[in-house]
Length: 219
Image 1 (cartoon, rainbow, N blue to C red):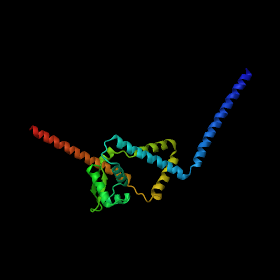
Image 2: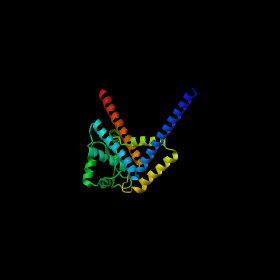
Image 3: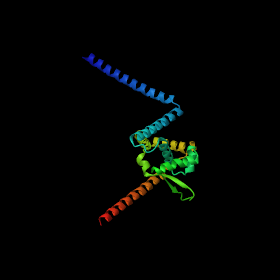
Image 4: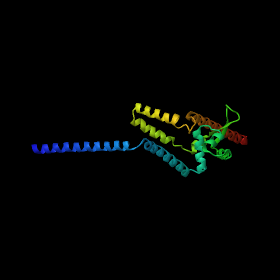
């Protein structure tokens, strides 16, 4: 009996050591994998995943909705939105096309209701491009995926680790990528709020006009 108990205890200790060794090997493999990746490889993997998710979202929204926008127009309106409220010249310069070509694309987006031109308050000679609320109704930029990834970061990292990532991302955006300038998020948000309010006001006015006409026809 005593011998059986000793054998059982030895078996448990052996299993415990085996599991511990297995865990250590898994952690070691994970560390080795991370060490094998260069900074460029890690950065490129994150970039590729965000890019593929964006393409997936674009193709999905084009396939699941009535294609009122061409693929090129979809990219153009996303670029204009990302630039904030650019002029036609700024848009043309960014995508490296002629002023005439940019004007043609902007006019097409205006006719379809995704874009409007508003006179600049600083320079009355300039007209800034603003996306309308229809842009947000039709499209779904990959900001949702960014929110999801950041949420996972917050669950996994300490506040100090989150701060370090934020500071490094700000360094990359502000100092290491001067060739690519994007509009301010606050400006884009203010723009869509104003456009949504304008569209609602227009819809309310249209509804009131129809109600007035119907009442007049009955009187």
